Image (cartoon, rainbow, N blue to C red; front, side, top):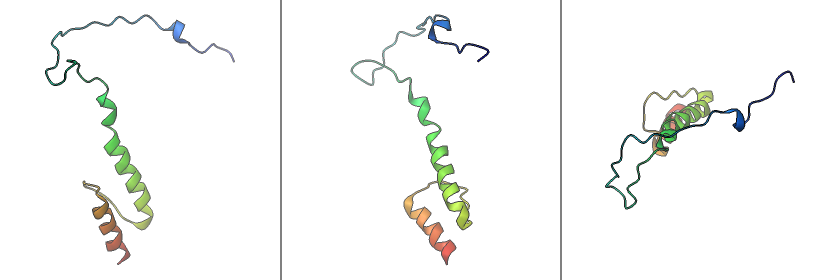
Length: 80
């Protein structure tokens, strides 16, 4: 290898700055969410998985919801 891979000791120190000190009234701890952003892509990932699974049957999905009843209905329509 011509170069070293960076490690955690190569990263700069991170300083957290709290801009708001208003606890949430929605829970007993007063904490607010911070990790929910990861769920945003779940719908698109699941939709793409279903679209890829149904594409060999010639089924195109252009709208939601992707309920089991709707998917089975599309398969039944296609199979005649």
